[in-house]
Image (cartoon, rainbow over all chains, first blue to last red; front, side, top):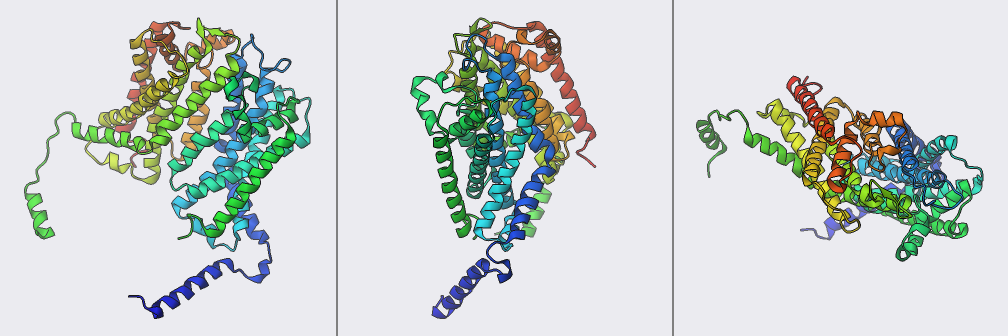
Length: 284
Length: 275
């Protein structure tokens, strides 16, 4: 049916369409600052704070519940780490888990929701480059995760002794975790087509990575066979470094931790950039 | 091939009012199966994910709190913990099933699909509650079977296990219905889950014997239905209870009767369901 005459105009049209999408007025220069800010702040961060009660206070309540349960049920016979209070040991992990879970949930849920409702076109139509799109999703989710961390950490500081506070370690590992999970959430959100895809990743990847990471136990407590497996869990390094920054007890090296997290962040950022550039599952 | 008009005539001629008797069994079964298929359709999210999360909880709590051959209630800490965790998973999933079903139906407007059919308030209450109970019991069974690989669970009083499993799933299914009917937005039901259901399921003796609580809170626990269902359910496994078993049976039965009446009344009056 389609001879050369019908094929050629179509090809031209689709090429024109493609180049139109990439093209934007020269006045935007290289970086569309206002577009990025709208995407990052107004769509990402403000949306989060509009649901402040359950999105900020929900993680705070569940973190405090964990602390209360551990405080009541703690084992007087066997201290987790000699010389360190159990609550002092677990609180840094609980704060970081709040950051990680919020950052992941925010990015992934936002993308799945926009895809299911068809609102993703609002972002795709805007003159934003793939990198700006990725950065908007990942950084806004990281910001939301960090604000949960600040809230939980602030509440914990009232009753836990963070005497050996090291700002560079705490900030470094908090920001790296937030970025890692924000990027992971963005990539998972692009991949997931339905809510149960998203919750499968959450239930079978994010929660196990977070809970089996040394948040609640020292690696000495692990059976011999599992002890080396924990070193393959990036969240272990994040929690260990973060804990070192707050209470000064570390079980691994910080530089290895930064290298592992940095490498993963770089890899996920490249993957996410590429996915937005080809329009993976979001362009017909 | 008959034309649509003819077809309509034929079907109209053969139509008569169907008499359903006191109970609309077919309608009730359809509503129940709709509720069950709704969660089975996404079983990774509704059955497997809770199972994995609960097994992870078992791992982290026994690693963090169990060391040094610790005994609680006359058994190893992991054996003490396992029934509490099974109950926690059942409770959270029964609640999630009925509440999400109703809130989603209300927000999307397809609540009319269950209000329009010839189903009475009692049939609506029973059908939806039974759907939530089914999910709670299936999650409980899945978690329990999963735990058998790690914890030597023993059965001391099977009837106590069954009674408290059914009563707890029913109680939370009814609470989920009441919460779902009351909520007008997802925020409302999320707030109920975060600030009521999760704290109660965490703090009512899932992880510790209430003997460890300060005396004031021990007294408070004796007015908490969540405490009795965890305590009675655990007694069925380990043969040791913190509170009175008889009071537990009575509290569960009476509280469910009360909740059932409230849910029934909500459907009967159309509270936040009918304009």
